[in-house]
Image 1: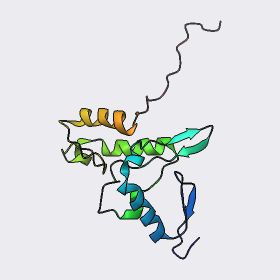
Image 2: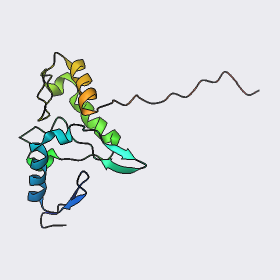
Image 3: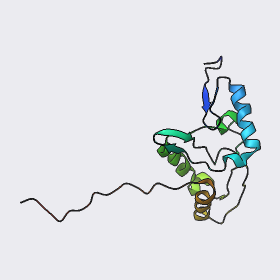
Image 4: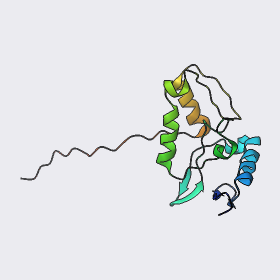
Length: 140
């Protein structure tokens, strides 16, 4: 670890950063060409991370600080919880627009925004829990 007690691996580049300032600059480089990060979903292949999930609602937020823009998710369910936490009328304050730096699209309602996230940013909501199959066979 560096002097900031900070260490982060950029999954996209396969480079380690142990300096918070360098990580922030690296994140700004990605944000300057934000079409590279258009698909925000995490990709895991055979239990190995191929691409980290990113925060589509926070990448364009100037308030949270540049190093938090590039928060990476390697757990798909954690990433889905993050996205779903923003997909409510209260969280969006009635303003349905994509906050991603390359998009800035406005929408009529929450459903349109959800479809846009699915189509452009690869957000595919989880289908819910599987139900146990009902068996008509009973042991006698």
